[in-house]
Image 1 (cartoon, rainbow, N blue to C red):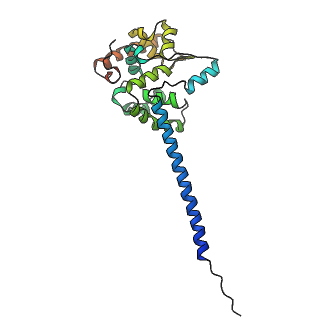
Image 2 (cartoon, rainbow, N blue to C red):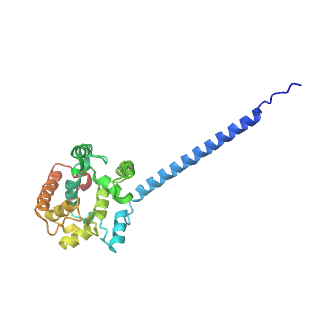
Image 3 (cartoon, rainbow, N blue to C red):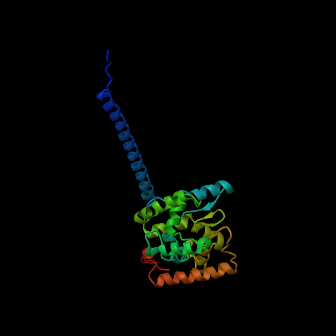
Length: 248
């Protein structure tokens, strides 16, 4: 007696395929919503600090944990001598007013010279200090590259400098220009002279090994160059984006 071959039930096949397709659709929706939520959180975090001062940074709280405490007081940018702003730009990012977060000429020079110099702009340093951490991992660099244009687009150049001057490390456990001005020179940031501002800016690349109050020959040379640079960017208009009508 002949037997009939069993045939697959079309309905079941369609049901299985439909279940898998539904699962994929739900997963895509979950991923999409997760990406949207993350993007919204990042935008909110950047927007928040346009008006709210960052309470701390990864470096500040890790140093506070290591040392027991740190010296840091926030100061409004209007209470900082304009020459301090010019000095830090001259020392760290002379084309600050001309780029959108990345100085391509500095990056090319850094690549050519290897580890002898850095190519990070002040904007990149603010992103690293405020939102990220200090290591040289590719993950950190990728996040920094993504966040920097967002900060540039939402913050004014003057605000970027204000935050930078309040989170930068000027000595071991000394963060911000207010604490540094008092520690090194016994003055308020508004009363810094061009020489004092240049010395503070000159210690920034290596704050734990340089002393603005007792500069060696190399630091003195660097400070003179920074002082000249600050005068130059004021004269040629490269300070216009963060100074406006400020004098001094």
